[in-house]
Length: 109
Image 1 (tube, rainbow, N blue to C red):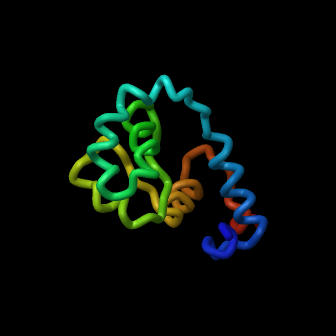
Image 2 (tube, helix red, strand yellow; image 1 turned 120 degrees about the vertical axis):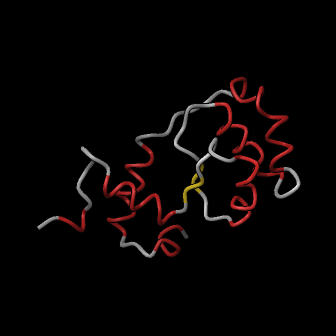
């Protein structure tokens, strides 16, 4: 499903996912509980299933939330500059231009 939606070739998706997964950290629930009430106020009216992601983004040092769900853009006024919302297209562009990062597989000669 991700491969179809991304429009990438298999090896390109593997590269992108490798870059993403190398940056993932497992966070204990105890670390995000202090932000859950605020996250509920922000996200519960729109999509309660996504409240945990807002709590995580509010309570941790992170680069933002990766999603293509349009309802995340409805909360921009509530999260202002505290949480960056990344679309798949933005994430791919960011990974390709990151200084010191890996060369994109399409850029090989």
